[in-house]
Amino acid sequence: MSKRGLNLVCGFVSIVFVLVNAGPAAAYVVPQIGGGQVGSASMIMLDIKIDGTNVVVLDTFGNPWAALTGADRPVLRPLTGTDAFDPAATSYYNALNGKAYNYQYGWGNELFAQGSPLPAGDKIWIELISQSDGLNTYARSSYTPIFGTGGTSNIWKWNEMMQMSHNAYTVTPGYGEWSATYNVYLGDATSGAAISGYGSDTVTLTWTSIPEPATLGLMGTGLFYLLGSRRKYRAAA
Image (cartoon, rainbow, N blue to C red):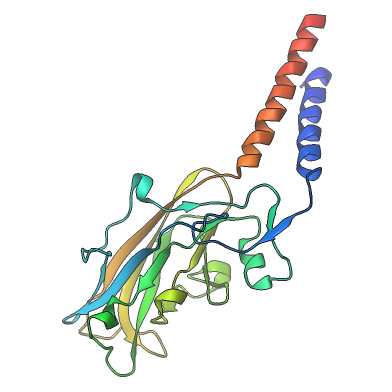
């Protein structure tokens, strides 16, 4: 790279650094269901039910669960502008800070609404089969890692409480498509070992993700600076 080109690159990096660090103080916020600060997003429920000797997962219309596509997929969003999570709120700050996140998906208690109690000594378990690289999951009751995140177990015991079963999913901010596939089954309440004689159900969750809008603005500003500098050099040549 020529000295002139190197100077242009350094100028681009410098202006981005200044713009990032020259903003007002952070405004502390709390996590929202739709990621970022989108609190009006709807819940997306996966209702668990025992149908005879089979564990099944249904959508809110009572149909077998099908992976969401296109605009129906929830969006993993980062915080924007001066929004930030309070460092003192370690329950979610460490899990969500600097990430795009969403917790619209929830495991519903259709099982109990239909009057089908679990056999004594057994629980519903959810096992991670596969997922996109870089996708992390946290139990929102405490924002502790689950489903393999941070070296945790790939199986998770459903707590049978819909309100606390909206796990938080996170990725590094940026455009992308993400998925995770799970096996939902009846298992021993302590060990998680599958109970013989019961069928299980496999479901896939999908997301899209976006970068922080400010990032795009900084890139555009830097590009404008870079192109403007190139024009000046050409005019002077």
